[in-house]
Length: 454
Image (cartoon, rainbow, N blue to C red; front, side, top):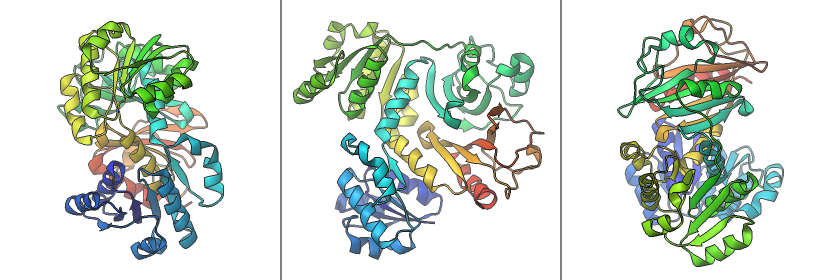
């Protein structure tokens, strides 16, 4: 598979790194010499220092032989023109574009159905806002997401010593918890991701990723000693696009909301956009301002400025004031392994959301969704099992899954099943798998060979 990436910024760099590690042919185009040099030095990819919206550049990069074009520069206009040129030169090339400006939103369907015929439009900031809103109401959850149109949830949660499952083997879950038992997809212990088997134990302090039917989520959370708690008061630090979108959603949900923003012009703009949200001008990491605004009484503090260090400081300050539910925006992947050690676990990343959206289209096989978690240490993959696949019509215990991969859920005719060794996947089933980063390449090969004939 050949992929051209237009844009060598944070998203372009990370997706290039990911795809190159899976031995895909990657070409990256960016006119910024420093960004291009960084890619050339760090990654085994071809780098072209030029404008990715220039048709001659695209032709020289091999657009006619390219399977997928990813336009992920910081300029929506550049991304649109790159897709337009690619469509004119190579109509069969699949096109993905990152568009962040909400003024383009009414035209998304036309961009897909008319020129430039963009196959997938990526708006990672909207995905981050939706994730933040879901995380707010489950204080004990570190991570949370949906599959199968919301029928199935995946949750990442820290296991405390008071949980009845602490110290138990997975094989004993069925007899102890019955139908409400969670299916454990991954255990994170000492910065190592474990894809568990029946004999594995879950221990106090582990970060547990599990899958649950949405209808049974509250009962499942009780096993962990957690519960859903709708919020009433929220403090947002950072009034950029994410902060603005989030505040508007919270207003509709009748949540009392405050935004702290350091740019006075942006404050004036936000004041005009909001109905009930209180907009405050100031430094969100200023402890005096936090105290004056009674930040410690907030049900949740969300820090979504463009600066990672500020967001980390804000979350630590909020925790110091007694706020247990903090959500932190982080851009740099190098920070992820360090955050839990300082007590910051609810982390969202526009970059990671963009990578997940892109991987959904890059993965071979009939993949419906692909979600990167744990700072890209692992992936949940949702796919359709097809008639031609060797994964169908035989017990799971007879299928050689790659080490570090597990089938976590089967959905058939709206019925959700936790798989066992004698479970059989039938054609048309939705299947949800989890794999650590090192196993994804082998899992994709399995899906490609056995699911891609459709």
